[in-house]
Image 1: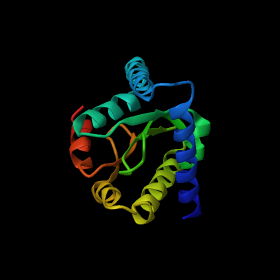
Image 2: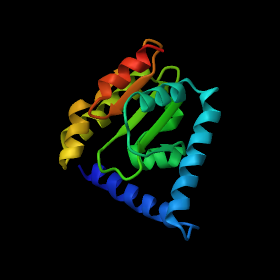
Image 3: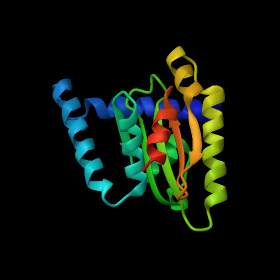
Image 4: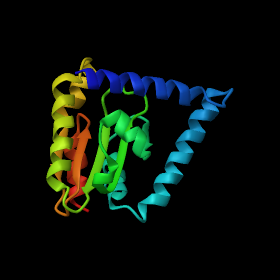
Length: 172
């Protein structure tokens, strides 16, 4: 519980600092952030199967504005995962965290499948059990899914319609 509260506090602080940094006009900042995230995602799509899966999930259902997290230090701070255990990964979280929406795809490194799967499952269970305080978060948690693709990518999708996103991903 303390870890979850810490993650939420760190997220809010990071988002508050990032949203005001170097911009006098919030609207132009938002559109430039969105544009850079789209171009970053497009450039990584060709090289990352995790990113292909994440983009398919994000396109399958209506998500609010999402933020890609690729910095290993930030992933550790927000989620408690060591990216050295991953061969490939893609993390997206809701920009303002109001609805608990997240899209996570991870391919464990060789010999790390069980440890990575257990860590992701523990994060999933903890978030479902104690991370949904508001009705919108409870909807996301109720529809959330944890699973694995046929080619070994472990995923977490927090969204009230996560099943639709999973069906699209599995059809790839």
